[in-house]
Every structure is written in structure tokens, then in C-alpha cells.
Length: 116
Image 1: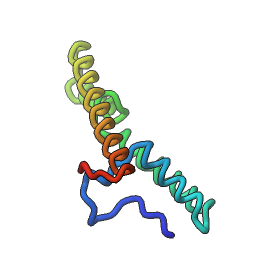
Image 2 (image 1 turned 90 degrees about the vertical axis):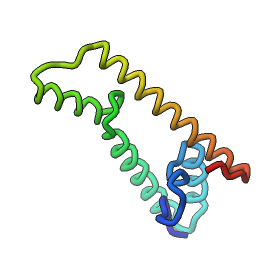
Image 3 (image 1 turned 90 degrees about the horizontal axis):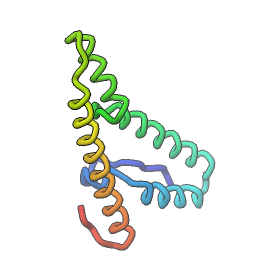
């Protein structure tokens, strides 16, 4: 069975996976005919997805820090600490909310329900 992590014909929301779906996919990979090669491919894909996700320009991620550094270089001043704090809290809330929706979707998919 080939390792398929995403598909162009699937809905966009089904492309995001929480640790619930990753554990399910890992179990399927381990039971495959070539478990070691597919497990390494899955680990590489997860690492790549985390690295790219970490570059999103949200203040709580590395991409947000790079964006704030770029702002400092171009404007020759730092944004105020209150602004940074508000942006960090807002982006953390967005990430946690998005993670909750994805995890709920994965659990519903395991139970045979389709939310998204």
C-alpha cells in the first residue's frame, strides 16, 4: 500500500490531521508490507509539515518572530509590548481553536461521522 498523505480531490478540511489521525495512519503503516520504509517516509512527511507550519507568520510561531524582526529592520523600531502580547494571544487562540476543530473532525471520522 503506498503512503498517501494528501490528495488533490479531497476536501481541504480533510487534508489537516491531528495526532488522532496520525496515530491511526502510523498503525496502518506499521502493518504494511514495507513498514520500516513507510514509517521513515511518514516521519519525514510529518517533520516537513511541522517545519512548514512553524513558518506561518503568526506571532507565537517562528514565522511570526521572523515577521516581527523584518518589521524592526524596516521601521527601525520594535512594536510595543502590548501589541506583541495581544497578537500572541490572538494567534495562540486561533491555533488552539483550529487544532480543536481538526481533532474533533478526526474523532468524528473514526466514529464514521463526517463533519467536514
